[in-house]
Length: 202
Image: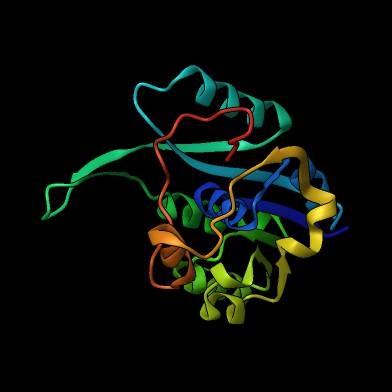
C-alpha cells in the first residue's frame, strides 16, 4: 500500500479554523489521512511561548500521545518602527527539512498549509517521484502551491470527517485587519502567543 506522511503547519491550520468558524479534531485528521494508505509518520509544527504554560504543554502532550511528532520553536518578540511589539515564529525550515530528509520513507506527502513558500520543496519532491497533496482552504492557498501539488483537499469538503463537534472558533467573517491579511497570499500566517484553551486547539 501507499506510504503516507502527514505534515501539519499548525499556524496555518489554526488560521483556517478561525476563518471557517469551526475547529479541527487532530485525532480525526490523523485517522482521515491515514485512510489514504499506510501512515508512515505525522509531523505537527507549532511555536510556543516561553515559559510554556500548562494548557499549551497539555496540548503538545496530547498530540504526542496521538502519534504526532511535534516540532516546536519559541516565539520571538519584535518591535516595529511604530513601537508595537509582535510575537512571531516560523517553522518553515523545520517543515522543509522533514519533507526532504524523510522522503525515502513515504510515497505521498500530505501537506496541511496554504503557504506559497512551499512551492519549490513540493516541486523537488515530485521530481523525486513523490506524490504531494495539499490541504487547506482556497482563500488561504497560494495559486503557486496549489499548481505545484498533485492534488488538493478543501477542508470544507472533509468537515464531517475532521471537525471537533461542540468546539467553535469565532469566524473571521471577512472583517478586520486579520481577515484582510488572511485573504492575501503574500502575507504569511504567524503563530499567536495566546494561551490555548479547550476550545482553542491549534
